[in-house]
Length: 146
Image (cartoon, rainbow, N blue to C red; front, side, top):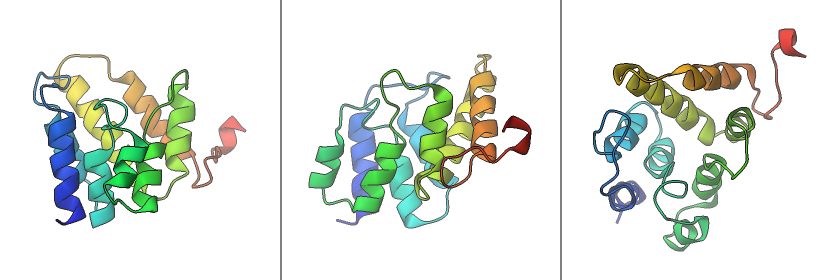
């Protein structure tokens, strides 16, 4: 089975019964994020980006499924740690070249969904700003904030 197909199956399984901010099946969020990125590896990561944090999967389980180290590392970079601030999380995701475009697509989709549902979307705008100010090394590149 192709890894993209397997990633789709895992996302469907991991997010079965979950809903997004608008009450739609959560899998649709993963599908929209995957549609907003370019490469096959980015699409695989997009489908898997929330399976550890929200879907009961582990990094070890993804490894055992045969996903490559870069894909597993990107999913790990997109998994928020307990107690981690939103800003630190975005900076960490930004430092992984494969995770970065997925995080941008994720934040954009979350922003649109929050706005459509009448929810506060400020944290997603803040995340997009942090992402734009963060270099590929995870450091702040905005001269006004240094």
